[in-house]
Length: 274
Image 1 (tube, rainbow, N blue to C red):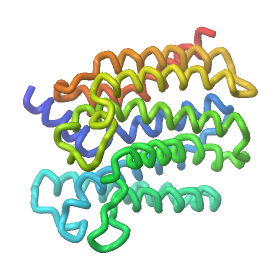
Image 2 (spheres, helix red, strand yellow):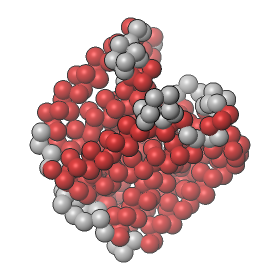
Image 3 (cartoon, rainbow, N blue to C red):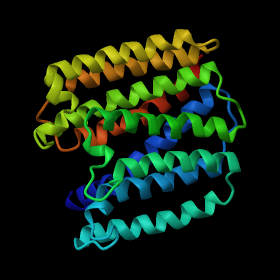
Image 4 (spheres, rainbow, N blue to C red):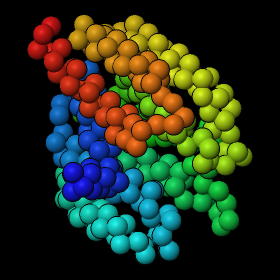
């Protein structure tokens, strides 16, 4: 059991779990918008997510962003380096338009993780702006990138889908914000610090309803898409209902981050039934 727990902890701490969620959301986009599947883009984003998330979580705390003193973090650093090599291989096959979009998103990630000026704060220390930035980057990676890779223009349905994806990420961040509300500095004024736990949960429920309702603003959507979003919206509401200040060890880091993969599985099942 101890070895199993250590393996699970490394799987979560090394950001493999969140990388799977990214790939799942990208495939959901491809299925909703009838896009071609770019395997190199999916693999690249899987490995790039591992590298970026581990850098944000551990690199900014390390001396000069590279030298870590904790042996456990060094294992994660080596793992990230190997992931970076695999990501670089798949990056070679990406189209120029995808690279341009990636560069723009990378700039935003850099602003999020690194101080823009000496002694300045980064965007991750700016409370509400932080969650909006994270939601925007996730929408860019999981919706805009697959669209750009397929050579399509950013039409109305794609814009609606990107907006819905931002809403999903905002909802999924609420359990993390509630978990960390007593750790975050009061000056950050995060959602739970502004609205309280109950207010934040109700905001998540409202956003979940908006997420599902926004589907009807699309010019074209399938029954599979609509039903999958209704079921996933209900799952988000349940998640808000279960979110508490005192959470189990894996509630946010495992179960909350698993929900995109669950959504992907729901979509596959409905695709076989409808």
